[in-house]
Image 1 (cartoon, rainbow, N blue to C red):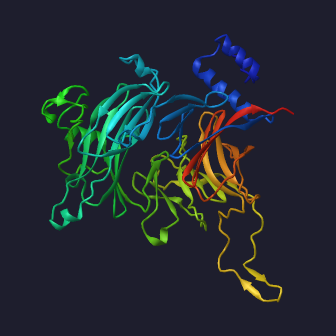
Image 2 (cartoon, rainbow, N blue to C red; image 1 turned 30 degrees about the vertical axis):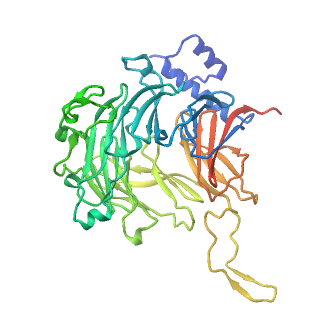
Image 3 (cartoon, helix red, strand yellow; image 1 turned 135 degrees about the vertical axis):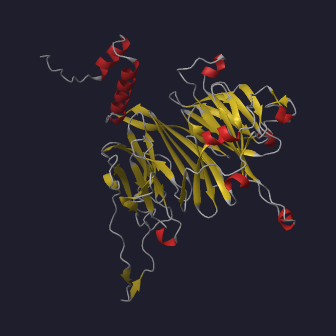
Length: 507
């Protein structure tokens, strides 16, 4: 009989030594390196220290170790001890202003035609309808495509991360003059769908009344599913693959001529890209639900989260099976919050099938229990729960010095700034840690800290104080990226970015 293998534990020095000698494979080494980094971050002689701040008159964005300011004009890298400027664009006109952008990381398993395509790039949409591919390291423009002179495009989003994306136009609004004349517009909005690596057009899909009916308020594309929202609170899902196969009138190639453009070049100004996906009748419906604020799909087996569009259901979140819309046991989640900010619920970003429900005083991490091919409905159970530490609430009845009893008309809000309150939650997937922004209300100026919790158990591992004051009246964003924490806040008409880096504490 073979001897039992002892599960050995290595310290950081042994692991680094094995890495230098190439003993372990790349995947194992990567996991071990992240384990080392996690242990370093949670060690008591390490802390996150504020190293940099930046103020901008326009929104500030952070993604994959880069900070973008002034409508993507300035880019700073956060991989060093302090953020350093990567590039700065010359001043642009209003027509050339970048409206939206996506960061592309090239795949490791593909051989691409151009060496520049193997490096990260920024896909930027300008106000004058140009889609530009820009080097994420130097800011050099690598490619530009003119979208259209007919439609105004404004939004960029991923369909399948790092594979296909889409550019969404603004919605076509009927003018009062057109309504008086009885003229109805068929087209509601347009989606320009692209492959990346290399950049190639799939087509421009016209969202029209013939195919999707009237009352369309928004369209989202995700994982090959076209989700159409309506004014009656309905959400309908369609297969993008089916729509492209059935309604594609002509395959397009950037830089080549097209009959739809009178044999002009696709992607050149002023012709742009023609609408080559024309839906002429209603496509097959995959799924429909009615929800007050849209639906979310996730879990295993597939479930969806929604809020029925009835007044009595406001503030509740329903979890149901996507297969037959059967409500899960304990599937109605309600925190009964009395707060200015509503609670939020979403599927765990780690694709673990769990659900995170965040309120001002409680965070519930839920799991969906379901057996395949079972006639019984699935069940929503608590995995773990986190709560704030609060002092006793002030009594609703107080007695004045004259002995008169005064009854307060309102309860204390759950997100009262003078009480400890959960504000934000961020998941660091590589370290498997939850970062939670908490305000404690101990100072009149408003202070906040970051709590790091184990993602599997919810155990509190450490606390990190933020130096800057926290104003609850303005929006905030939090990013936790390995050895870097980024806090972006809005202050009146300005935006501020604060960067914290991991440091050793000298005692």
